[in-house]
Length: 359
Image (cartoon, rainbow, N blue to C red; front, side):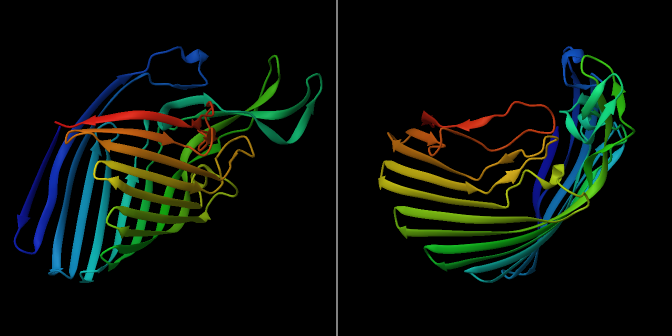
């Protein structure tokens, strides 16, 4: 249940939105946990979430300076956790063709049910040095055993964004945005005891691993975009994103330091062949990246992708399109869902026909 209201208070204060909500969830996990790599200890759970939120815009100098403030507070009955989030954005428009902005924000992520109550076995990793035991031979691997943490805390993000948008002509505009994000109390799986020797068909060590919020990271980046309309029927849009992990409290690769490519380039184009026929294309490039894994060397190669669409406006209410996706490769890998055991899923080339009918 949620209530929202929008209203204006005076000439210089515009409350875009304010309100509150309540959410109740109840669930039960079914299945044979003994046959699963990962299980949740508490198979039944329920929780309540109460929230209050508001966002307002203040015209400091009409048509020149504007300040936008927003806040949200969540109260979870299950853990009595108050999770405040705030945002402030200052906008300066010196003229009709340029605008500059700066924003600061703070976000909070609460623990998931799995992080509090998960129990599972992760893929084996090599020991720093093999161990030879009498009668058992040489043991070279250790199996991490992941345990949730009922006292798992919250993750915090402090974000700073700066931007400048310029319209150089009626057909050309550019935008540059820079950001610096500070992450604190990040999730990290750390050893919680000494390895245990397990006797079985294949003797091995088991290392208990416990989830906690002990790490931090600093990320900076810049995004460049340009929009150009050469003719009345042709438009182009290009963007380049550069991302850099400036600091991490963990030596080596960690879960929060992997999974985001350092460079992403996109190029979109649309061309109206006729009043009823439209052609669109989307070209993308991603740099190589490593995915956090207990298995070393899991890298996703740099890759290009291309999507195309040809749309025909059959009538005022009906549009028929043929779409091709990932046309440059038969299949390619974009992500690895680690560290939990998973099947690698590649994105395949595909073509489909689509019809949109609007009444």
